[in-house]
Figure 1 (cartoon, one colour):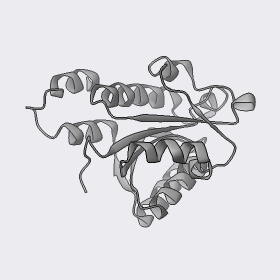
Figure 2 (cartoon, helix red, strand yellow):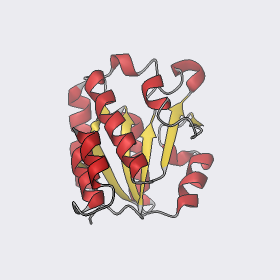
Figure 3 (cartoon, helix red, strand yellow):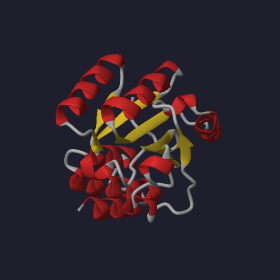
Length: 180
């Protein structure tokens, strides 16, 4: 199934101050996430942010948070976002069936959220260059397992251009500028 601007919602899972510095390739992760967020905002697609126990792990990193000041992060203690009633209420409010997934750690919170979203009937799209774990091998394993479960794989650029579909889209030039 192709991505659709009217069906998509972006989830940014636990990209927090104390976690980010120990993630594999965290500089590239932030660059990709910044492009992703700017593109999603340009296309006016809803965004949900989660924070795993922010008192202990800190808030969402400022680079990402400054792009989305108008969105209140959902605090959680469960690894899967889907075990949080507030998260599920916000997600249901948008009435969209395509969940674009970004965040950390791929093999824990991202993995468990994806499995639960699949079981709830969502089409799940991993935005691979906007994901990380402490070890690359954990990220790779999670992606392989999730793909077997039915998750779709995309990159930031692939997803954004799939969402605009054509160079005639009124936001195509904006997306092209963000990707460069």
